[in-house]
Image 1 (cartoon, rainbow, N blue to C red):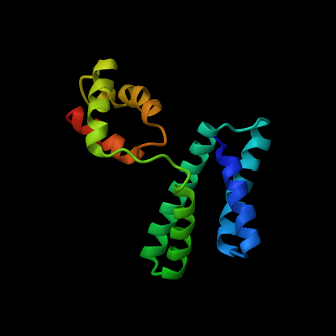
Image 2: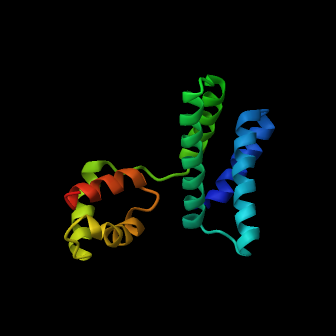
Image 3: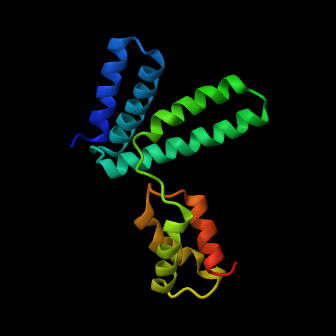
Length: 149
């Protein structure tokens, strides 16, 4: 199975050959971000580390979309949404709240958490299990509800 980097490079080649400038730009942006991280850390990124990078990039796009919407810049909103859509294709399917609740309950008991002060302990146990497959805000909200805070 090809890696995320290989898939992105194939997307870039295909987009360049077909003249699809927007996809080419998105693929190049992702390629540049991956290469920068690899140079900074002096190692090749595996798929898990690449997914973490893509997740960060998606969060940045979503924050930009919120800012642009509040500023009335619909042209920029559309561009950011298109790039976010390109990035999402590499992410695994996101877990729903119903799928997360049993994992949250297990993490609460594993961390022996009793109240909202133990939020950090629960998150430390839970986040590695759902990394890239669940929105951090949703996970945090469900843990707070489970801890009664």
